[in-house]
Amino acid sequence: MSPTVLFAALMVAGGVSAVVFVVLSQIEERQMIRETLRQLDGYEVESTRDQELLDPLRDRALQPFLNGLTGLGRRFTPIGYVEKVKQRFVWAGEMDPTKVDRFLAVKVVTSALAVVAFIAIFIFGVLPLSGMPKLVVGGAIVAAFVMGPDSSLKKRVSSRQHEIQVTLPDVLDLLVISVEAGLGFEQALDRVIHSVPGAMSDEFSRMLGETRAGANRSDAMRALDDRCNVPELRSFVMAIIQADTFGVSIGRVLRSQSQEMRIKRRQLAEEQAQKAPVKMMIPMVFCIFPALFAVVLGPAILQIKEGL
Image (spheres, helix red, strand yellow):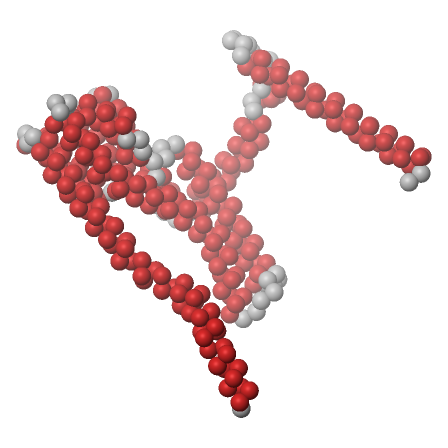
């Protein structure tokens, strides 16, 4: 490379670097000014544009776009779908209503991608396949875009419900020990919340907050059951409500519930163990058996072919 060309390239690179440095410096200076103005109490901006520029870029650009996608998702979803999604988010432990709007926005984006994938695969023939393989692979891709958000949400719900099922017997054991040691039911719940972190303790904490805010214990327990939707927890809630209604000893009820929950957890583990051989059949048939047949029957087939 000649010295003239090298000098010109260095001059261009230096000019571009200077422009980028000046622009970034101005942006950083404006950002510092906005952060300083936000900390001032009683500061008012006369210009509407300057007032809007004080908001973060996410609120000025990204949030309107997400709101538009959310409105589009609410418009084209079936009747009752939004309420079902809200209920699933409650079962997943997500109480923030904005996450429902984000889910609907993601659903709109994935549905649009599914339409694009369908057109690209089955009309323009992007995949280098034909016949049944093309139909299977293309259908799987389109179904993944359409059903992906719902499947992810269902997985989060089932994971949280399984966590509650597994930890409930241990929580009840600690409740039994605390109550039989002389603590009240609410004090025992406080000890459980601080000793056993997790989804079950979070729900008990919210239930205690509702009772301390003035709600009835029975109503708070029923709300706990509605937020979790776990059969074992529903049995525990009904037993506590009946004990409060008829004046039965809480410690005796907790001990019987603890023993019952341990039996149910053992039965759940045995059920999962019984399902394991059935689930293993699919990888064995499609992955292990073909390789085994190739290794065992391959030499025999070659010998028969040579003999014939």
